[in-house]
Image (cartoon, rainbow, N blue to C red):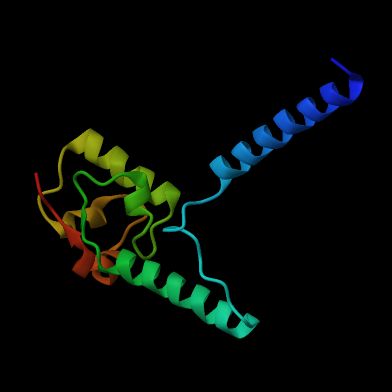
Length: 124
C-alpha cells in the first residue's frame, strides 16, 4: 500500500467517525429550536418558552406527603433547606393530616402556607 493511499484511507475513516459523532451529538429535529431572522424574535420565543414552563410549574399541585425536595422547592418561599425540613418533619412525625399542619415545620409559617394553598394537597 502506498503512503498516499494509507493517508487517504485514514482521512476517510477519520471523517466518517467525526461525521458519526456529530450525528449522535445533534439534537433530534423534534427538540430543536426554530431559527430566527432577528434577535427580537428569538428573545420573544425564549420568553414565551420560559413563561410556559413557569405557568406549568405554578399550576401543578403537590402532595406534601410524597413530594421530593425538587417538587417542594417549586413552591413560593420554599428553598432547599425548607424543603429538606419538610421531608425531615414528615419522616419524624409521619404524614401530614392537613395542609395547615405544614406550618408546624420550622421556618414555614401560615403566610407561606397561604401563598401556596392552591397548589398543596394531602394524600396518604
